[in-house]
Amino acid sequence: MKNDALVRLIYAYMAVYIAVSSFAAPCSATSLMLVRDGFWGYAVTCGTGALAAVIAVDVAINDWLPQKYGFHWAKAQRHRLYAITAGAYITPLFAASAYFVNAAQLIFYIGMASFGLVLGYREARAKRGVTCAE
Image 1 (cartoon, one colour):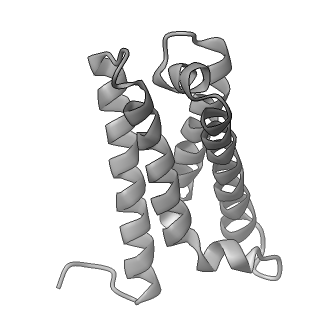
Image 2 (tube, rainbow, N blue to C red; image 1 turned 30 degrees about the horizontal axis):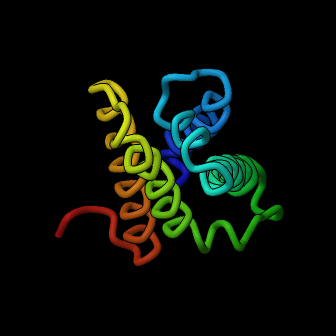
Image 3 (cartoon, helix red, strand yellow; image 1 turned 135 degrees about the vertical axis):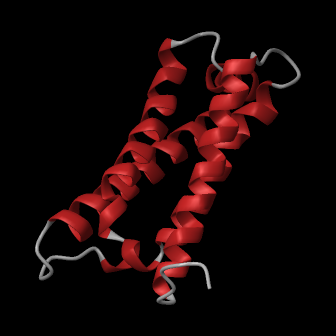
């Protein structure tokens, strides 16, 4: 799936962005999750950042470096990484829904979670050798 490496890198960047912006943007859903949920809010936020880092390293090593270099575990688990990251995108909405979530945040978080599931689905299909709908 080297043809969508840039898209996967942008997806990882956005996950890092929401993890970092939770400390700087006080009205974001992720920031509310940090304030209201304490330890578990920080665990989800840091986990999202760590997942994004693994995805970014996977793209950099497995797609852009020569074949002799490889991060084989991440390449084998890509579909799971995207599904777990999609769950990490949607978690702040559940945590902040009782307090405040505006329409833009709702669209962003649900859109990014859905896009992560699409990336995971495409990766799973690529591993089976299916390139087009049959």
